[in-house]
Amino acid sequence: MESHTKIFDNLEAEFVSLDQQYNQGELRVFGSNTERIFRELDVIRRKQIELTSDHIALEAINDSLSQNTTSSKNEAGAQDEYQREAENFNKKKTALNSLMTKLDSLRVSM
Image (cartoon, rainbow, N blue to C red):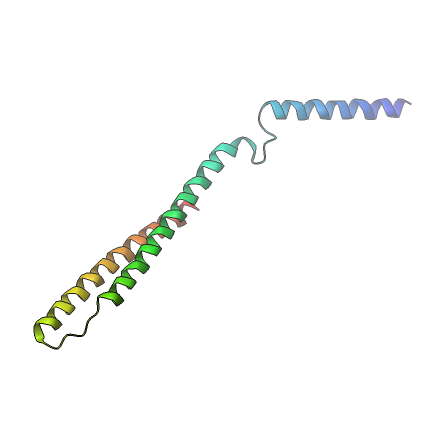
């Protein structure tokens, strides 16, 4: 019977210890850092959504390129087409640079 009492007292002490840890917020899934971790995960999620949006916008530039191409038979038409292509290329270059910067920011966040 004495061994049962020791076991009971030991279990009681462990439960008291667990109660203290719970009251101090140490028994959370990620310990006392739970809120900070979820804030960081939210930042990562927002950056991923922004990257997705930028990627879709980049594809839209491709769509506008294929829709705007016309075959020109004269030099003025060819010059206009070249100018349009150069502008679209610069838009795509800017969008890709922005995407790369945001990807790097996401990498740092992770």
